[in-house]
Length: 390
Image (cartoon, rainbow, N blue to C red; front, side, top):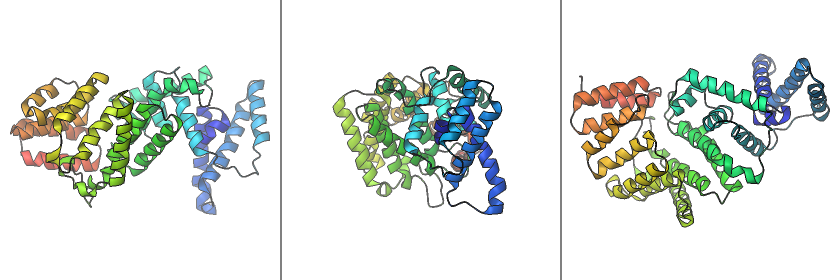
């Protein structure tokens, strides 16, 4: 998509061409066998189909000229390279995060095109119904097309204005990888790796932006725990129960170093604070050694920077460790997050630990309704079984 958007000059044209190329691959490859470079084959085929489509749909002289120019520059018999993929992806990332679009539309569209997330997965990230998100995506692409938004990396002076949306995209891609909303496995390693790759690229591009550094630190510290986050069979292991000896020490060290770098700059932002919270966890040799008061203080800061119900929910988990389960449950019960799986899971856990078994069972049932991932569902069913029938 990134390469072809550059070649064809538009997102819609690139999407159509990619789909046609994949359809051609499904009919051609079974007969001829896999080509030596499948991505190169797809790009070449899609490019040619895109040029043909431009010719067929040309109703104005400028579109005809565009098709002729593309045909002259990129002859079909010449092999097409995949191009500088990193630059192309970054260009599309910043194009989708154009200020002409609303922030939500910027993030949603980029997640769809670059993050590879489905409309349903994006809707889950935004806590909205899937049809609502589908309409947002259609409107965002139409806005880019109708406004003639150019496909290029903005000027250096424009990058900071777009960075917030770009970071949100990378963050949500990692979130979906870290805890897949559907499927048989808890983690999607491809999304985690891609988010970290993009995070490194952004820090390289904008090394003086502390929030870019903070997001990279956050992802590295989370990624360091991935080996201990599941059993050999793939079942979920909570942070409190993880074997910390299995954490990746190199990633912990790199993430902590980046957190210290952010602290020296003294320009706190949400990603930096989340990274600092995870750095505190990574400092603790055991769960009992966790400095929960420091974690709670950091969540207080995070809530001031980003006053959202989701942040308040995660703060309540730390509050339970510092002030007790009952005060934490009071906070949780005031939140309007009925469509959020983690809300019901946190509430169920607090009720379970308080010994309110029937209420805990009902909360687990509510979480199970929203659980699309097989591993999360198995974990919740196990906890539901522990509290017994209502």
